[in-house]
Length: 70
Image 1: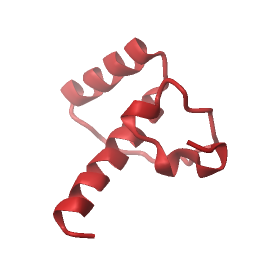
Image 2: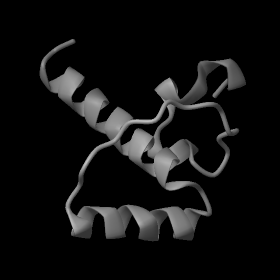
Image 3: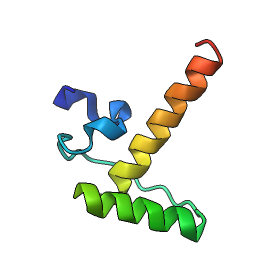
Image 4: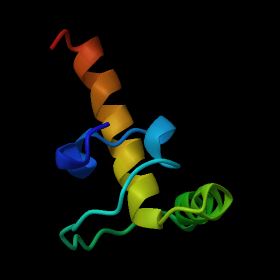
């Protein structure tokens, strides 16, 4: 992945090689179990929780788009 693509192209497979880029703050509430899993994955992969969440969202968006035929 090119550095110029930023987090909008981030996927779970990219987390270990993704350079850090600026983000915007978004205040959301998630279930405690989901947060704990995100935290566990972030620690295991040695990345930020933000990167894990963005990667999961992007992956989910890819799946939704493919299912919707876009």
